Each structure stands twice: as C-alpha cells, then as structure tokens.
Length: 293
Image (tube, rainbow, N blue to C red):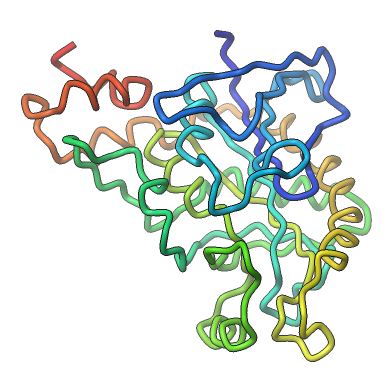
C-alpha cells in the first residue's frame, strides 16, 4: 500500500475533491470494519493526499453510525501523519456568522452512545492518551493562514467545539445552555476523530464551516436542512480553495509530526499482560511498542 502523508476528511457537503488529479480509489479493510467510503487518492497542487468523505458519497451515514475507528485506522494504514478535517457546524456566537470559518482549539463532549468508537484501547490493553490540547496548533496555524489567502473569507482562530450526539439538531434549551457554558460552535463528529487521531499518533485539526446559528438566535429559531444546504454550498468552494493552499503548506513543513510517540507513554498495561489478539488488532498503532513481537 502506498504511503500518503496527508489525509483530508470531508464533512457535510464536501463529498468529492474535483481539483484532484491522477485520481484512483482505494478500498481499505481494517480490524474495525470498513471506513465510511473508499478513499480517493490523488494529487492536489502536486501533493498526494488521501480524501475520505466522512458520511459517504451521497451522505448515507448518520453521525451516530460513523465508523470512526475504521476511518482513522485506515488513515494510519496509509501512513498519514496529518489529517485536515472539514466539518459543517452551527454557531453559538453572534460574531461567528454563517459562511464564516472557525479553527477550534478545544472540544467538549456531549455524546452518550459513542464510547466504543472513541478509543482504540480496551479488550486487554489499557491506554489513557494525553488530550488537554486536542488539536495540533501547527496545523491550526496552517489552516488559519490558508483561510486568509482566500479573498472575502472570514476566519476565527480558536474556540470550543461542543460535540453533540445527533442526528437531531439541538433543542432551544440545549442551545442556550451551551452558550452560557461559553461554547463557540456545535457539531456532531469531530471529537471522536480527534481522540482517535491522537491515539494513532496523527496530527489533527478541524476547519469548521458555519452554516447556521443553531436555534438560539431570534432570527434563526429553527435549523432546517434547506438553510444548512444553502450555506454549505457557499462554504464548500471556499473550503476547496483553502485546502489547496493548506496541503502545500503542510507538505512544505520542515518539522516532523509532533505527536509521534504519543501513544507509547499512554499504554498502562504491561506488555507481558497484553491480550495477543488485541495487540494484533492494533498492530498499526502499537506494534512498534510491542516487545513480544
């Protein structure tokens, strides 16, 4: 399998990358099942990237059904060191308007049924990854600078992404409570990706595309699919322009992946107590730390 250094996960509305050249599709099987869709491997501005539509082409997978572990493990099998995630979000702030972009630096978990999809560990190997700073600041800087290269695009650097369960949008009471808590944007998918990417020693950052004001705003007291799609259409073209710039900047980085080795210190279980089946299952992530091989 060819090594690809940069992975892109496309969220709602971003199902394809028409700018990719020399495109080929790659089906990947993982110990956690199949990813959301086939990977699209191609060259963007001369840089080879692996693109994965998070919800599948045609948007067939709900947030609660997403195979997060398979998606990130497949990225690891491809040799990806950097993931640029693109996601549609609702805004919890007046100054984060629809069509604005946000590069969050924190996450807050409000999911309930996704615990099994939030970690690779378990089944005889215990790991507790450090996650106080859940995204890669260097990738965030690259995304911010790339956003600023697009005329007319407003980008906000920093902020907290609250990850709700979905697939229903928030109640008004929930939305107003999240605002009181100081949350900035709301989505349904990125926290699990960020946790798994850290366990897999992959640098990860989110480019969040604001599509609505959730339901707290007096002029937007209901979030409709028509509203989301309207702003997604406007956002997607800008997102594609940003990604073209961002992959060039990531490819030109001189510093290595800052999270290489992060998982070694997270593993609590002594190697002589590792479940052999789990160790085999997680070989792409922890195999280099397995003295029993």
